Image (cartoon, rainbow, N blue to C red):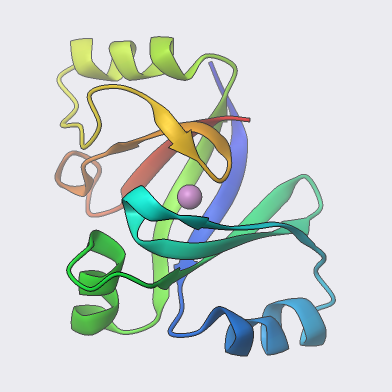
Length: 131
Ligand code: CO
């Protein structure tokens, strides 16, 4: 079951520069920060009520987030829905004919995650996360 919007992903040129707004001007606490090698990003989660904002700074040229920044600039990148069972949620999406990016859940900043293809989702990249 999808339970809430876990986070909204935003691509930024520089995490340190983005902190000046999201952490310092908005006073949102940084809850986690890590380099995620397989996505080629340095990422942070900032808490806002029961949801989070995920900032993504590409560190590896040619990866999805790096291409997004090069082509579209900084901005909204994906929506993440929380689930209590990411494997089951992914299987359900597959059975319902949703195009997937990930065939299996993998480790991400928000827990076990997977991505659905934006072409199935009216132009929005959607992530599922099981924290
Ligand atoms: Co995310």
